[in-house]
Length: 368
Image (cartoon, rainbow, N blue to C red; front, side):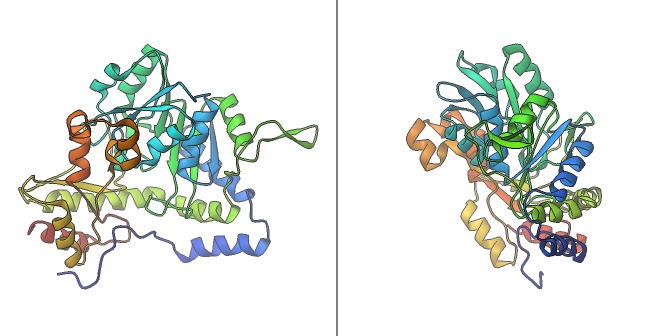
């Protein structure tokens, strides 16, 4: 039914975007310049956050958030058991301990009803993930965090534009982390944005991203053992050009998702759910297959029919590093996360697709 192979993702880079990048390259001013500032201003204005810092990738944003909050050895951080592994990796990088919590089977987001039982005297923070572009129940997470005096770092890597009760994710917690990877709604190739409403946090992030430099009396002073987590100006130009059409991108993704939701009627396929009061930005259209089906066989069937499907995210405690270190019975402790990992299928969804293409993919999915 499909004449050409449909990849899982494909960034929409047009001539205007390319010309913006070429302009920066021709200028010779390549590192953290005017376009970085423009991108940061857009994010803070769009989200309603006081401060936004552009960094080299989404993982670095989470890393600097943890460092800025002083989280390290002896501390525990609550992390959903189902996410891209970077969410947990950053906790390991600062020497803290991951405390995994299972997800809600309908939304793939952290199960807020299981957070409290994971809190100990060593718990310092929660990293809720807005998985696949759907806002988690961040309001309830914040209630728990306030009750137990915990920091919250929102992993909104996939969820630029997602909301709960009309407030954008990335603005509820102490920090909001966004990715600009090519699978996201807008991309800088690699890149990330870290938002906060705390001026002290913002200042420290900007020092840490740039080798620990603080300007004092017109000269550089190295006040921290910092990192080189800067974004280049041509990367920022690429993202800033695309972000001008963000609302149209998200609207097109919603239209395509509605085609999937209306046309996939295979009883062996469970479709994603969007709870009342929240919206989905559809970074990934993630479905679950029936227990009678094998994930690898379904993926092979879809790929043989020119659909670039893949699994969606990891059950992190089941990954070798975490399985070896924590030795958790992940099938027993995190059944929803393991099912989402082992029975999940990500279908292509991006603004370059047509409704007709998504209709044809849906018909193939119905044949599984």
